[in-house]
Image (cartoon, rainbow, N blue to C red; front, side, top):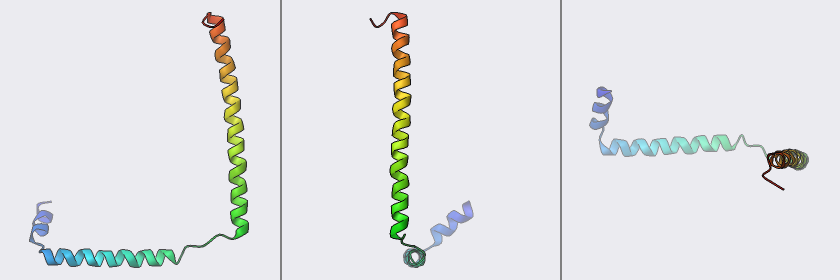
Length: 86
């Protein structure tokens, strides 16, 4: 660790600036190469995944509505049994 600290203190400001520029250039080259790998989905793929999302949303909404109704009814009965609600 002390050796790394000594190396960092010996590094001059112009070398650090060049290092930042080189790393920035490497980053931009990597971004460009990754962007060439991006594939735009077809219209059919977008429509099918959208349909899956819409169906899933309604299924989860129905599930949570059912759970809410069951738990709400159970709590009403428990409160009534305990005499908290008339």
